[in-house]
Amino acid sequence: MIENNKINENDARRILTDLSAKAYEEVAAGDVEMGRAHFAMIRAERSIIVRDALGDPVGVLGAYEFPMRTWSVFGFQTFRFDKHWREVTKAAARAKRDLIADGATRIQAMSLASHTDTHRWLRFLGLTFEVDCPSYGSNGEDFKMFAWIGG
Image (tube, rainbow, N blue to C red; front, side):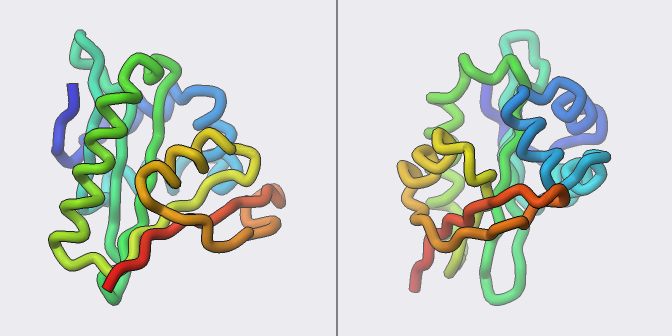
């Protein structure tokens, strides 16, 4: 089930508690205590929450705006997320279209350099590789930035 809603404190904590190994690796690279990840989820101006059949949160996609109609997007998923990737991809594509319709001129995302599946997914959504960010993570991890740039 996909829900366009602001994420609440309990759902944010549940997602961070149950992060998949890959998501934990990415989040911990810039935020060992998970405080910034939690803050990003709660403060996101737009959120899409993915829930399983029981209504438990299994992932979140979010976006927040910078000046000049630039949006930074993020996603966190739990170890129960895999069954939902198709519907999440459709929801992410819809969210991108909504941001563009609302006047976004740039949509950007960061990912660990080693997460090639995520890079492939971002490209599928229409973002292009923009720049390597060496030693960007708090422990010196390399990241990559992807972006969609419009008019």
